[in-house]
Amino acid sequence: MGEGAAGDSHGWAAAPGAAERARSVLAAAWSCAVTAGGGREEFVGAHTVDEDGRVRVHVPEDSALLAAAICAPRGEPSAVLEFADVAPVPVRGRIRARLWLAGWFAPEEEHLVLHATRIVLKQPSGAVVVGLDEFARAEPDPLAVAEAQLLTHLADAHPDAVERLTRLVRPESLHGAVRVQPVAVDRHGLTLRIERARAHGDVRLPFHRPADDVGQLTERMHVLLTQASTASCPRVLQRQRTDGDG
Image (cartoon, rainbow, N blue to C red; front, side):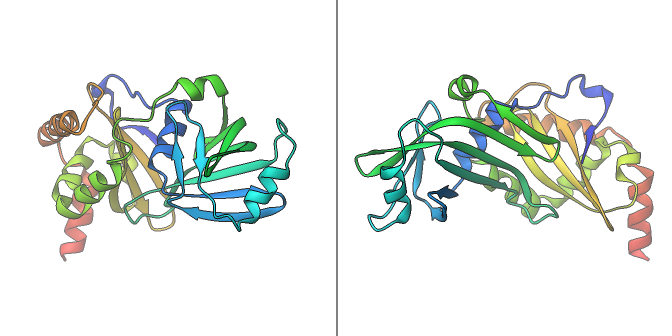
């Protein structure tokens, strides 16, 4: 689905690796689905994540999941946790990624702690198995928790800036576009969702340097907008605005 970087002038198109992306999905997720003992339960606001990526789920005492976890053989994969990464901005195909952690639960105080044996991250580009050690060492993107607020603010309060950023997109990627929305941001860059009448695709605008906090992100966005101001407006977009004004 991706359509590549916006142009050669940026020099690089760094993006988070699979382990970092998986940890970011986990850090930002508010809900999860748990399958164990032949049953499936949805939990909202019930899980926390340790520094090494271990997931702790607080379950009610009358939950069938709790009984299944206690009765399951130790060390044998018997549970799967699923997390969905949903774009905070209303766009087509809002699920940007899914993360599955398979393993076994161990009761610990008032929580069930998942000991993962297999981790799979699925994105539009395909599914990849994330190494357990790599996952434990990785850190979530520093913007992951703030991303939803950042994107909705950009889309709702600064549509003019989003339109200006399209000047950094190759004209052929904008052909047939009916709407462009910011769909993701991380320390490495901003991703725009280009929607057409019957399809959509993503274009990534990489930052000149990674942003480690919101303050640095503001500066990186300023650089992109400055570059966009000196770029020519794509003829395809000009024609669409002219047709729409008529």
